[in-house]
Image (tube, rainbow, N blue to C red; front, side, top):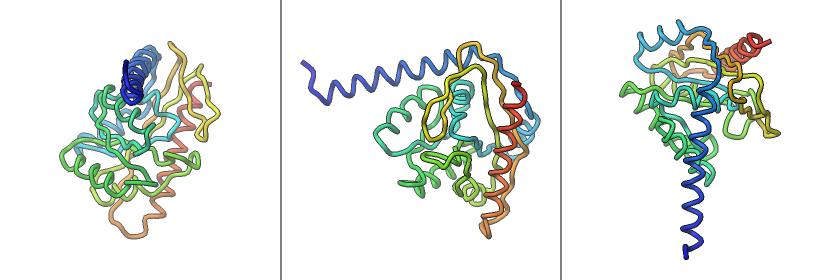
Length: 217
């Protein structure tokens, strides 16, 4: 008979395997259109690695499609975060544990190290708790410290299911129509007066989000 702890570990393992498989299979069936590919190609060519930034409710589509890049992705230190971290690893990401509320400084240092090694990283500037579509300062701070550009992006798909969470998290239906929209890279020159850059990132993310949604109308 398994102990309570062992049953919890097995349930978590099965959940990780099932969840990552569902994300991979579901998103690969999406008929995807990519906008602004030249922004991504130029940024990677010129800088070797970038800081991908997208709103929290875009994660499902992007996780299934782009996990193979081995990009570092920040995951909270909560118990739920442990499950997400394991699923992210199975999808091909490099989990970095921490969030704006706990472990953020250490996580940013780890991401800065990955960028220096030529590995891109991914952040959700409105995560992990919101407010929705409100960028926090982390991505801008990381860009200033690392010298790598932020690449704003968004993903949307129809039809899909929208949850009643703080971010209105969306899960696209199999064989949905989807759009990924990249914006112009954002270069933060130094650590002085980061607020205007935070505002610019927020505006760029909002623009990518609107572009992706408008393409599906």
